[in-house]
Image (cartoon, rainbow, N blue to C red; front, side, top):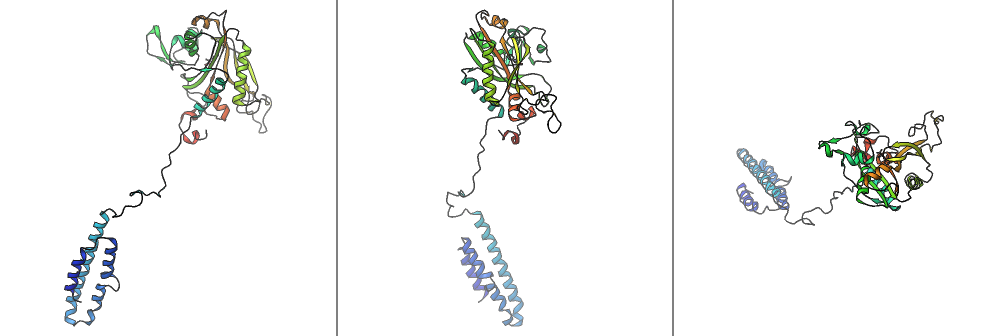
Length: 352
Ligand code: PHE
């Protein structure tokens, strides 16, 4: 086996090295333990002494040429596309897919939907109003006097606007009463969910923006007992049949008489009055030991409001109520900090 004919043979073989298998066979043929190179090296002792060094040099040169050929071929093969495409046209159909996360409704939206549907079942219609309101609809039309503290620039977000038609971010959903009554005639049974704004300092129970649901009913002969009946159906549907309600006299400029409505504490069931302590010697933290939780404001629509919208107050009567959605959701789900609703922390939101 002379080196010259081996070289000629290699030159012929190089052109056939078009696959990994062929390249592997080539490598084995020349470089394996019993391959041609090691056979050549093994033959050195049988040579005449003066020939050995030159022959050894030749063999080493041949070996490095073979290694260079292999390295070169490996590069070209790696750059080439696989000759037969994988099943699925090169897409690994066995690879796990990327799961689409399914979203859900925000707990405040869920609470609005739940409360709204309770009233819709009682025959109320849903109406929405704008968050930018006129000062008239937010205050004057609702019989809120000019010197009422809630009109103060620090208690309301005013928008730069002409003094004649001052605009603000509504501080409650009650202005929608004015809008609806001005454009429709009784009988009316309306529910109004929406956002409201107050420049309150943010803490565990206050935000500068929150949600309310307003409700009102107007017709001939609507009585306070109708308000009580409607709110009782609502409170029992949201908080359970065992819940008790109490109407506490209050004042709102746009209702007369007015009442704040409390429900019996959903944690201590109202059993725990102020002088009764829990087993740990603490007052119930939800109601503060009072046994009652305030949930909304309400009353019979003030005759002055009817006059503002052009209804005859001797013919029509009506009730109205307004509640804070965040407060209802916090009580229902036992949430102690209102800020959690708006931090967009998925660990919180995923629980609903
Ligand atoms: N608008 C009142 C508030 O935001 C709530 C209310 C509505 C009270 C309707 C009575 C009647 O506090």
